[in-house]
Structure formats: C-alpha cells, structure tokens
Image 1 (cartoon, rainbow, N blue to C red):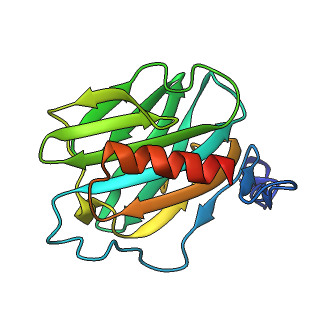
Image 2 (cartoon, helix red, strand yellow):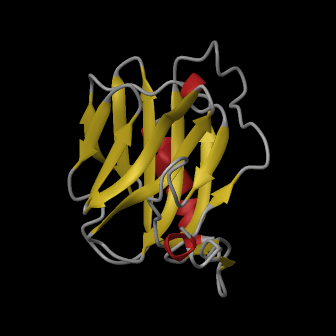
Length: 185
C-alpha cells in the first residue's frame, strides 16, 4: 500500500501573475478557485447572461477546462472548455464551436445568451450562433473554478488576461466596444 501511494503529496499549483500584463499564467497543474460562493446579481430571475474572457492557450490542440462552476449538489453546473481547436460549452446541453482556437496568440471570446439562443464572438465579431442552446444566470452560481475541472484533473495551460460575467445579454456594439477597450488600453 505504501508503494502505491508514494510520494505523499500532490503537484504544486502552477499559477502565477503574468510578468508584463494583468492576468494569470496557468502551468501544467494550475487551478484557481473562488474562496466562496459566486452568484450573478438577480441570477434566479434573469433570462440572459454574457461571459467575456480574454485568454491565450499555451497549445492550440489541447482539451481541458478553462472555467467551471461547482456546487456539491450539482458538481458541474456549467463549463467552458477548450477541445482541440474548438470551444465547448456544457450545462444540461452541449454546444461545440469549431476552430475557435485556430490560431496562436491572445483571443477575446464573448458568449451572449438570451431568448434567441447563444452567440459566440471572437475578437469582437460574431463567430457562431446557436438558436437552440441557452445559458442562464442561475447556472453561474457556486464556486468559480479557473484552469481546471471541479472534481477531476482537467488542467488548462495558458494566460488568462481577463474575465467578466454579466447578468444580461450584451449587444454586438457593446461586445465590439469591450473588445477594443480591453485589448487596446
């Protein structure tokens, strides 16, 4: 039994502040978790939500969890994953956006979801629309986990420069303005 459990430690958490930018660098085994329960204001009554994330994966061809929410009764409320060069969104449904990570360098993704489905923007421009897939603010409740999955190892490696969650659906003009503001200032 001792030989099977040796060594008696887990890997170090490989998360560090970026040297020349605001943000975090995730190594091979990096995880950030909120210290308490996260909740979007008016999550129970809201029907729309938006997520903005500015990141740069270490590898284009990788499969790992970038962001997830965790509650003990519902371990995987929602997850945003890199799946090879594609983007996966999972809740009770599943959305796959092909080639979202098709090039090297920083990438600004915005996901808006409301009455007419879900739209994914890449660098301020509409990249994919799925009218039958929806995200809801009540799914963004629990502990926020960045760079890994809540209950199994699924580490994402790369730079996370920014993250914003909104209890409403951003317009195309707002998405473009946020992209320009975040990436140029």
